[in-house]
Image 1 (cartoon, one colour):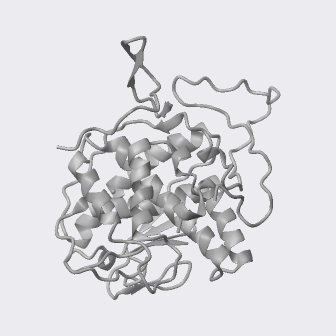
Image 2 (tube, rainbow, N blue to C red; image 1 turned 45 degrees about the horizontal axis):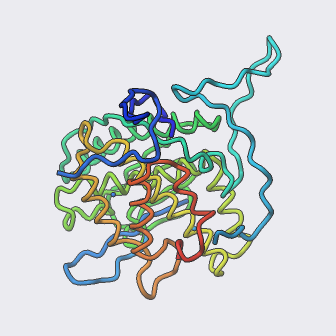
Image 3 (cartoon, rainbow, N blue to C red; image 1 turned 30 degrees about the vertical axis):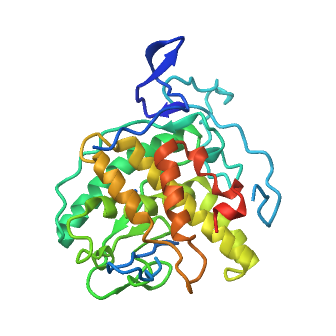
Length: 331
C-alpha cells in the first residue's frame, strides 16, 4: 500500500528487507508498551447510558456512476501526464459526490504515511486545551491534506472554535448541548466546547480528547471528499428518522470513527502520541455510540469501537468504506 506523505516502510521481498516508499497490507501497528457530533461517554463506574454527540448493498438513492480516475501524487507513485494544453491552468480539485465509490475509499494500496506529531503538554484548562487542539490540527492537516491531494481531491483546513460558558453553544447548524454533542462539526468548522471534554471524568487523559477531535476532523475529510454532502442529501431525502435515513447517518459517523483510528495508527509511537495513548483512546470508544433507548444514528458502542479499531489496525481509507459494508456491521 502506498504511503502518503513520504514515509518509509520495510517490505519483505524474497526474504530481504528493502526500504522503499510503499508498505504491504501486512504492515502492523507498533507494539503497545482511539454537521456531526461525538456522543459523550458514560461518566460513572456503573454501566450507564451516555448522552449522544452510516449491506454489501447499494444505498437507497441514485445509482452511483463509476468513479473518475484520480491523479496520483504520493511519493513513489508518479503523477499522470497532464493533458491540459500549454498556457491553460490545471483545473482545481473538486469534491466527488459518491459514497461507496468515492476515490478516497476505493484504493486499498494507499495508507497514511507514518508521521511525528509534536503536541504541548495537556492540562485540564480551557487555554491549555485550545493550544493542544490547535497543535493537533496541524498534524491532522498534514496527514489528510496529503491523502486528499493524492486522490486529486480539494483540501483546506477547518476552522476551530472553542465555545465557553454554559452547556449549550451556538453553531452554524443551530445551538448544541454538550449533554448531546461533546463536540460538533458543521460547514467547515469544528466546535470543541471545553465543557464537552468532561475533564472531571477524564482527568488528564489527552488521548481521549485527541480522538474526539480526530473524529470531528474525519467529518471535515468527508466534506472535502464529497462524501458528507452526498450522504446528508440522501439521508434527508429518505427522512432523517426513517430506518434508511438513520442507516446513512450511522455509516457516516462510523466512517469518521475509522478515519480517527487511521490518524492514530500513523502517529502512535512517534513524537507526542504514544502507543499507550492509542490503546487508551481505543478503549474509550466502547463507552460511546447509541445506547438502549437512544436514536440509532451513531452505531452501537461495539461498532463505534470496532470501526475505530479497524482504522487503527489497517491504516487505509479504503478500509473505512462503511457505505459498502453489510448492514449488520453498521447497526
